[in-house]
Length: 508
Figure 1 (cartoon, rainbow, N blue to C red):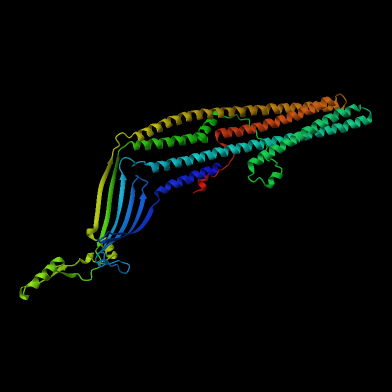
Figure 2: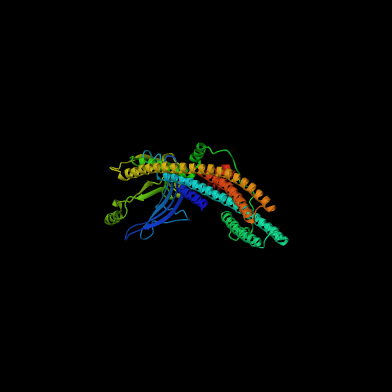
């Protein structure tokens, strides 16, 4: 689950980085506008764009390539003709524009804006989730180590109980021989039988503890509940270690302060607070944006059949009036209607879409504009309140850091004390076991020559078994204390030669 949380945070970061992905747009549009007794307007536009946010500096680029084709069509459809895919006609206008708009914040949003803030925060949160993953991994390793040493103790306890049971069986054999020889009363059989039953019960309980310890360890190690390993017995290979060297508490505290994931998480939280403070301080500034546009414009007015055009001097109502006047005048005095030559379109404007595109790159097609947008919030309460809240969070984080450091120091000191106590327990348990062995050997010799009783012999044997169990318990507790110290100082990976692949590396 901790690994999945890291991967989820990584996907959130990729989602935020998507704000800087370039966007390509294409929008073809056709429209027709008309009203009663008026000329209809047909308009076709094909616009393309390329938008991109710039991470450094917070600027934005908008590239555009726009093309439009507009024609007019009267009610009787005599003045609008569209031909062969280009729609060329004398009443069609073609316009092309190619350019770039660039907006650059100069004051607010220059060093940091909300997008960059969210990305920086998410990067820090990703590191926090990685710290949580490592903390959880250390805890699991510590649990596995403790379960392993519990299994070691349970098996050694079982071995000691079985050995003690075998001694009772040997004692029963000897007592039976003595009873048969007449040197012991039959009552001695009952005393040995009682002790034998008691030790058999101890073996059963120790066997149960072995099963419990195995299942606890398997729960931590096995993922599949149907794994065949559930039916297999675990046999530990590593035996408890012991060292006479005391733990240097100053070194342990330094390791904890440098390595503890909890402290790393709080340090990263402090970085998040610093990012928020930087952003909200920036938002208290006025906005000054530089706006610039550079574009090329192309134009064509359709295909003209003949550039050498001429028009009549009189047309429409004037022509009707001229004709009526001429009807009243003799031929020699009639008013003529001469043709007046009219210059046609320049060749640069004669054509359709392709001509318009060609005109984009004429020397007189360049257009540019530069301007500044200035915004000054008169009170700007939102930014000031957010800044105050971020500063409060920073103070809270500092208090949490001090509190967590005290907790870490306390845990390390307790862990060091536990190691030292366990080390002393190992020494005392060894001396107790050695003395119990001497006492048991002496009692056995006395029993063999008839100077002791089975009751005293059983006491010595049970005492020796308990001493052996106490010794292995002290040794396993010492190793568990070392594991707890490694967890408290977050040196589990280093001291156990464990390399953990971070989920952050898996996504690279």
